Image (cartoon, one colour):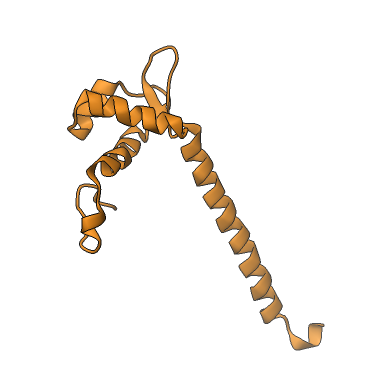
Length: 113
């Protein structure tokens, strides 16, 4: 499991708190896709100010990483996060098929072909 609060040893000088806050916000929204979360709940959970949450949500919305639920005005993960995950799974499936083809080619009996 990843400890999102710990700064990595190597490259720690490149860690940027606003970017880390965005990543924490994405993880905070995970599991709240149906009902969403209020900005206040997000701020409490991430121990940051409501104005920071407002700014972060606007940036995530711009890239499709978060969206506001029209009826409740709560926030949830946006379609871009799922699209990234699906593209990743597609690439893994493609690589697995390619490896299976190679394995089959090398495991064929010399007399078979």
